[in-house]
Amino acid sequence: MDKRDLKPSCVFEQFARVCEIPRPSKREEKMIEYLRNWGLSHNLETKVDSVGNVLIKKPATPGYEDRQTVILQSHMDMVCDKLVDKEFDFDNDSIQTHIEGEWLTADGTTLGADDGIGVAIELAILDSDDIKHGPLECVFTRDEETQLTGASGMEAGFMNGDMLINLDSEDEGQIFVSCAGGRTTIATFDFKAEKAPAGYFFIKGWIKGLKGGHSGDDIEKKRANAIKILGRFLYKEMQSHDIRLAAFNSGKMHNAIPRDGSFVIAVPNDAKESIRADWNIFAHDVQEEYHVTDTDMEFGMESTDAADVMPQEVSGKFIRAIQAVDNGVFAICQDKALNGMVETSSNIASIITDNGSIKIVASQRSNVMSNLENQCNTIKALFELAGAKVEQTDGYPAWKMNPDSKLTDIAVDSYKKLFGKEPIVRGIHAGLECGLFSERYPNLDMVSFGPTLRGVHTPDERLHIPTVEMVWNHLLDILDNIPTK
Image 1 (tube, rainbow, N blue to C red):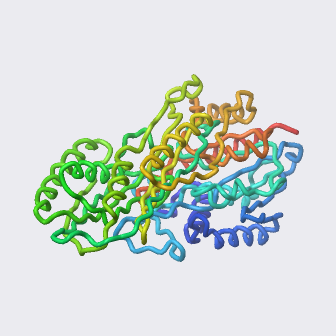
Image 2 (tube, rainbow, N blue to C red):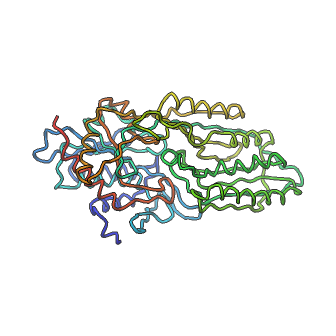
Image 3 (cartoon, rainbow, N blue to C red):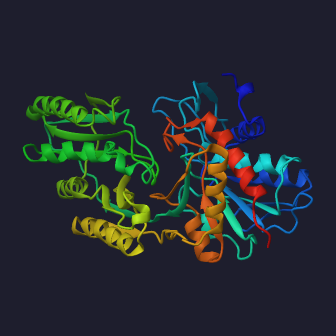
């Protein structure tokens, strides 16, 4: 398949332009300016609020002026991750895409189809002159991937529609009507670095090639977490060897399962061969443990330069905390409408060692806000017991299912008519901006859907090309059947 053959061409042409524009979370200025200029150049009412969200209005096509106003919404930022040995500057370089069978992917980086393909769909609709629709408001929010500051900081009255279609879901054929709320827990161990004892040997251990994935949507898939694996080894070796930790680094994003990581330790000279042997056995056992989900994991260990180390008491508490911290699925939904879906989870996402501190970031999610608080308190209490300083973000709310949603009925009926099968109506164990919108606009009728994506938040991210056309046709049919005011 050639890129010129991608359908619908109007969407993929817009997506190609989106890929040319750097748009890391919190640094979306180039994308904001592009969208603003795009709307004005097409003579469409365009506004940018104080936090950088962009709204472009399009009048109804003739005969559809009395329809309810529909908001189409996507986020403009992307998760920026790359292979360890890939040279790439996300602030200046364009994403390079290529086709692999029925999938569109990038060259060693995240693709940014989450949610660049939603942005492209909106722009294609705004650019069209042959689509039937009522009044439209196309909204592009910023900073969804880190703290949802675009949606949470949106000015009052910025949107004025009756129904909202969020284009930030990743499984074609599934219509999402509920999402998890989430918070982030940050634990910091401060220390005064010191010299390692005389006669100690420095070793670097590392792991890479894990599957990783989205810490909400992929948390139930039993994928390996690089932090937990490295922590397991260090805790095990602590039982028989005097280990002095110099550094531990893993993970980049708060909402991704870490795919790689490393530690630097100092050990007595007479222990180094024993630790190397233990590492080899440990690597074999872990590879066998994850032989289904993480087939490409690689382990390495090598000597390295001497460095200052953490005090033994601090490193011991840190290693014990990483071994003990809850990670993965905590509870499954009890609601029959969401049967089998993950309700509550936690993911230890990143660890960074800096001058005099080691910082751990973990994210908690739940579709039940009381259990979200419980899970957050569980993680907080563990790190407090270990002696770390702990802070937590305010987070974002869950989006509760509306059993009387007219938009859901329209979306389901349209899907059955177009494709001759029932769509799956479900919740998602990930944060969608719909949760924040439901607080600000309690009467807003909402659904979320989108084309199929896999490997999001990782360099394995890919977009299933045939599903883009399916979502496009589905969306256009919904717009054609929106009820009158």
